[in-house]
Length: 110
Image 1: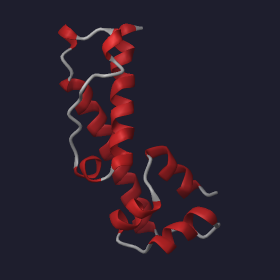
Image 2 (image 1 turned 90 degrees about the vertical axis):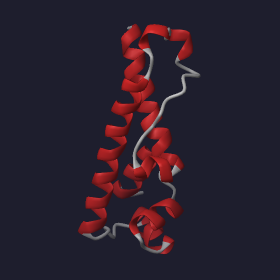
Image 3 (image 1 turned 135 degrees about the vertical axis):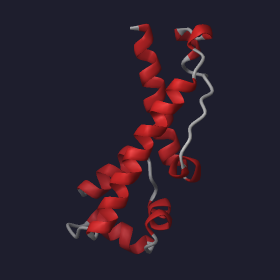
Image 4 (image 1 turned 120 degrees about the vertical axis):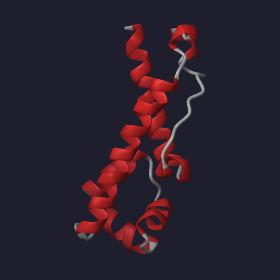
């Protein structure tokens, strides 16, 4: 495993999604995940932008929740609007943003 692989796993990005997002082949993504060969700097920069978008999308999704009509029992089924190009395009980042948003909402009840 590699740090690149760990970050992809953290945001739930599949190898196919990463290849599409970074405009590279899936074989390149597999190589960067399973060896010590690092991706080029522009790929790291794209990954950082994706992480930032996930964080921003999570913040916006949490803000969209109706806190006046939300209680702790709703957290498992609350419907959130998750904005952002990456989070709309790929399932993994959308799940990551949703998880962060729900975690932020759960803090309200702690």
